[in-house]
View 1 (cartoon, helix red, strand yellow):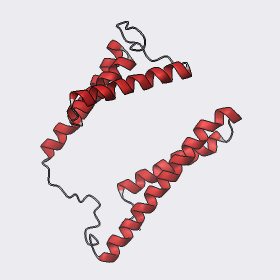
View 2 (spheres, helix red, strand yellow):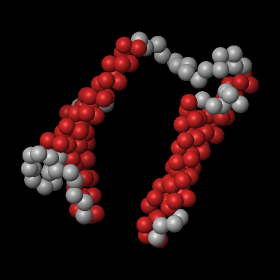
View 3 (cartoon, helix red, strand yellow):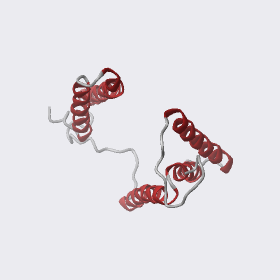
View 4 (cartoon, helix red, strand yellow):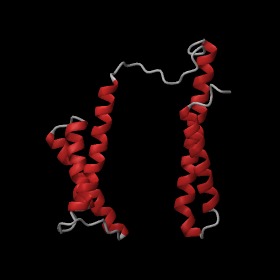
Amino acid sequence: MARWLTMKNLFSLFLVAWFAYGVWEARSYGFLARIFPFYVSLVLLVFALASIAIDATRIIKKSQAGEGAATGSDLGVDWDRPMAEVYVAFMAYVGIIVGVYIGIWVVGYPFALTLFIGLFYRFAAGVGWIGSAIAAAAGLAFMATASRALGMYWPEGLLSLPWPLG
């Protein structure tokens, strides 16, 4: 039993409880107010249960094959990377998130996300400039379409930019 209680399964159990509560709570909403939270919680509940089932079968197969039974560890990895590199990568992603928030504060949500999509595709995904520009334009087009169709107003920044950028 203790081998099944990995950090991944504990997190999945937390998600099961969270989404089950979402399903339970959404039942008391009015019909139109219930549709989105009920079905999103229900689908995510199914995914969390599937994650637990997949991980449990993996643990059972691993213990039957005799692999990892002596250690009981689920932290095995197939690569050997120095922790300094892991910390640098982690801080880079934290910096990206902080940069996006600063961008939202300065230039507004649509333009900051368009810049993020373009730069992420260019430098993190390794796509060329043309591909990253197409992805950024598609992201901006999606946000503009969603804004127009749903009557949404994106957060504006300190700089006033014309629609659909600001």
